[in-house]
Image 1: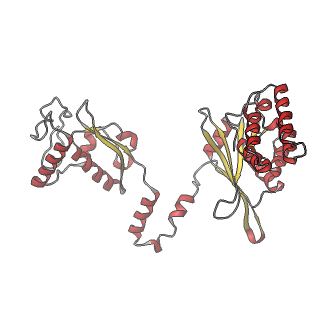
Image 2: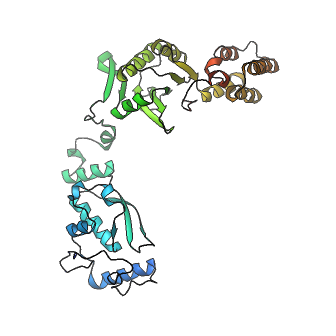
Length: 359
């Protein structure tokens, strides 16, 4: 491959470390290091000016026949050009052609072929898009929206985007639930186990945020939907669970992992009849510490929580725990015994939870 003064690239084979074209530059030799090459290139640029290349010619060399605006990262990954300077020129010309900047992930010299290779990410940051529009319009005043609006905007082109909300006095937002196409599709395949918890009032609106999650076939967390609630009453949880079922075509999960909130438990019993309930291990250990205030008790309680005892062994150890710490009259401990079928591994191990034990 060779270059002519008008910036085009002659239709010759790609230069390789074994071709004379690659070593036509006296600064490039088999013993030249990357630093020496960069210094030599700098000297050439100072003497002769920066090399001029033509974008269509470079795209032809990369064997890309698409228009610049149609090029994706898949078209660029693994492509080769003879020198680093040509890649730099390609960045600038390509960016100008599509109207944005292009981010490169890494650039290195391939020892086997001796050619520069650059792998690309074609994603554009939202902040960069907004900044470009601000420059084109002459300021933020004429933009009509903020960067935050771009991050919060839902994709209304989503064909099955589900959103439902309620209002109260003066048409103020009360509850809202939403789930996109991907989340609904994931639930159709992975609806066996569901976990949800309220991230309590950690948002700017000071409202509980509920996230419905599960696991996929790679045991990775997958999100099924979100809800922003006004409060945490039984009526509120019944509304959000009924809305969730409406969105998911009435498919009830086989097992549900919750944090133990009483209102949530009552709502689940009403809306998910037949589902197996499991209490969050993390919340149980936290409550054990706060209700008994004994590190030794918490350690012993965790054994009953995590270990695979048979039924007689579990009951023997539970009675020994009560006797050792004199907890026969402790209300929380007695409540935990009544709900042992929802948290002790001895009682829940025959159900499929997808590896989920916390919310």
